[in-house]
Length: 226
Length: 295
Ligand SMILES: Nc1ncnc2c1ncn2[C@@H]1O[C@H](COP(=O)(O)OP(=O)(O)O)[C@@H](O)[C@H]1O
Ligand SMILES: [Mg+2]
Image (cartoon, rainbow over all chains, first blue to last red; front, top):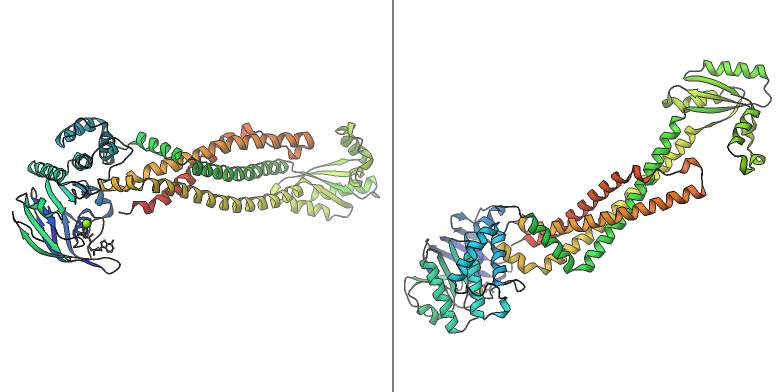
């Protein structure tokens, strides 16, 4: 779940990226966050992951109040999130399996837990035969599936994806979005940032639109026009 | 974190060391230099201390008697000395006896022609009761008429104390400088390692790694470098000490400057080296990794 209450963000250089955002996303929802480039989408994502903090207003993520969270609590908050980026951010010198183990080891999982969980998520993203492949041996769509598998592997409550299809052709983009929809159907809350209008319009989902740091539209199942 | 994954931290530490070998090598060399200098000065200090306590055990000094004194005057002087505070046994040694004693140890050296005057004087060998008041007692005896000179090991001991203090001060300055340089080099090594892995670190943080989890492999890396330095330094120190000790024995032969056997010292040296190496390594890398933990 996400609660943004009158959130402002001004960067150190004076850029006002967010100007009073109110947003509520409940557990189990699927929401697109759309808007033109520079409108503040990534700024919202960074606020949610604790990478930056709000200049004003309240930010609550999966029950953690990020306004007064302790530094040591941030890792625990992040473990409730799966984060996906446009550029995949896989470790090139590790195999698919290695990348997933890396993510699980980070939170202290045992070898037994890894052996149980990794085949399951690889199967879920359709890469059950690719465990030993290296990222650079794979297509962009496959790499993003690995990133999705990694986001899922620690069983998060919510997945946050910042332009996950930005580097992919329309067919792969659709596949990835369909995969995210399926994962949401299994119970994981989903917030997907994108500025690809056609893609958004193929799904009948909640669309939150921002422009110049302000929320301009928030509608269930609505189409999105720039 | 559910488990403390020691095997993982150690493996990561070693991998990192070999991925930037030159810097690691430089770091180890600096630590070795630092420890060797620290060790050499400390060993010198330990030996000087040893000599000091040896000297202090000889709670006896010699008072040389005026050449013009007669037997009866000497007897009177002995009485006077005995009555002094803090004086134990007093023994009269004639110059003939003294020379015979002296030559006994030096038959082969033909040095007797150059024997200093005092050696040829009649003297009193005086035992001091309380060592703490050694100098005070020597002065009281020297103040008596008829005592023209004295020789007290305690004096030598006092000279040694001055030397030791100077050596200790110099050692601390050098140790401070070298420790700072070692810390700096270790920090840079870690910084390099962390920079090379900044993407992995970012991914770890994104997946919810604690600061500790990110930090440990780097601390382990610093520890390994520090301990490697300590072990190399230990063997080098051993070799240097043995060589110096051997050279002293061959050239000097004077028992005042014989170094203690390394067998008596090696455990302490090794422990101190390992502890210092580990501390420098862990501190240096722990310090360097801090800024990579932001985000
Ligand atoms: N670290 C930063 N420092 C200063 N300005 C920034 C920073 N990050 C983003 N901005 C600015 O904030 C605004 C919103 O950026 P961003 O949230 O990245 O937009 P979007 O993801 O919607 O393209 C832009 O004007 C951008 O230039
Ligand atoms: Mg963006």
